Image 1 (spheres, rainbow, N blue to C red):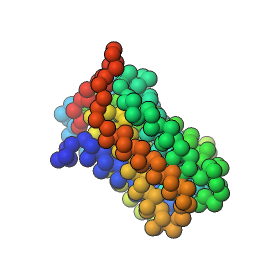
Image 2 (cartoon, rainbow, N blue to C red):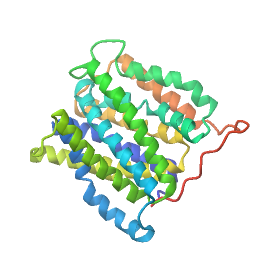
Image 3 (cartoon, rainbow, N blue to C red):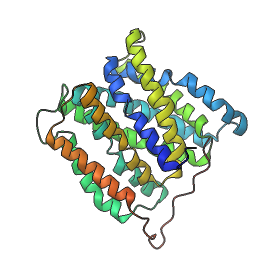
Image 4 (tube, rainbow, N blue to C red):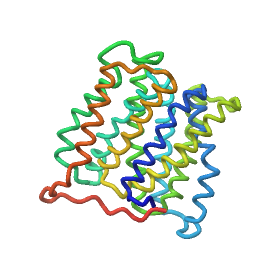
Length: 305
């Protein structure tokens, strides 16, 4: 555990994830290829990290394995759609747009688990959505990338899959066995990404060594470090706090996209990014409100691996 608690752990995971879109862009690979290898290359390290937990706690419950398999399928769809969006609207901007999850994940937690959602968060959701629209360049031309319309569609679809993945990843973590369950997620993601990539015609089983190098960096920064930290720490946080902290990912990706890939976000896109971050900061920093009469608290999280 990180010394300052789950918020720092979730934040560290989000920052690690910001490296991934730039690495995928520099790899020059198709969406299916990138998605398969960023999972496949992470598996050997994850198996080593998972072995002590498995020996200590045994196999996870069947329901948790089911959550992990479905989460892996959603993650694979998200990765392929999102990787396509990187080429179409830019690495930083595609990452910002897909983070509509900041609204969807808490709403899913409220609808399914009856987890309390603060009034202030609900009030600020429209501001976040306005920021997403501006950041995606939907009201202007000149978005970086090859096809802003297709990129926006792919990023929105990726956001839906991403939100479902995050919800199930967090929900499965309530039952412990976090590292084992997360490794099942990555196994599932590898298989589904290969299937979807083959059907979509975007899978190359023999990428160049240079491409594999960048995909290995993406695998370590996201698959081994970033998402594992999120899997461990997100169940220990209220859903909206975890979702808000993940907005550190688009901030880092936007900056790296501008510095490394020479992307040039427009003023309206920067304004949209600012709207997202300010509204997210306000909602995350709000003191917990008294529960509504009859409202049920989020279930306590089990200890992570």
